[in-house]
Length: 130
Image 1 (tube, rainbow, N blue to C red):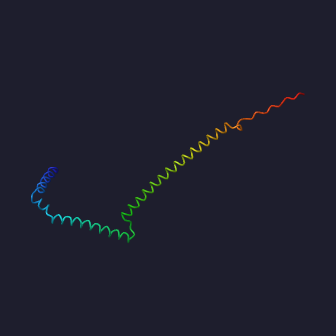
Image 2: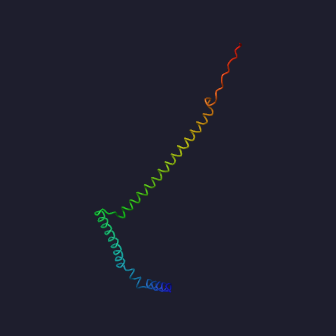
Image 3: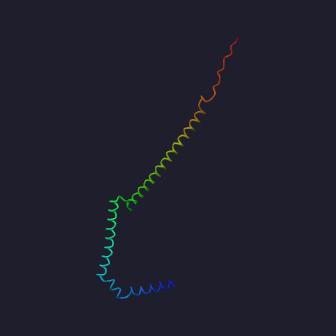
């Protein structure tokens, strides 16, 4: 039922828009100028209201949408920087761990090869003839 009403309304609107009278009215330069002026007036009124609201918010030291947007951008930037610093810290920690492991390995290898690590053989005493 509702779709039928929509279809009928759409057909009627199409007929009205396609009529010569409607095309003449829409094509009228004075009407077009009036529509443009109305659209511009609406935009100017919105801008004026926004400026006054910002001034009032500033006077009353209230937070504005722009302030919130700036704060969100700052927080997002700080989070990105923090993530980058954490990644750098993790990489530095990994490098330290690799260096320690290499040093431990080198120390163990050196200790195994070092003569100090091997037990010294006792020098033999020459036999004396008694």
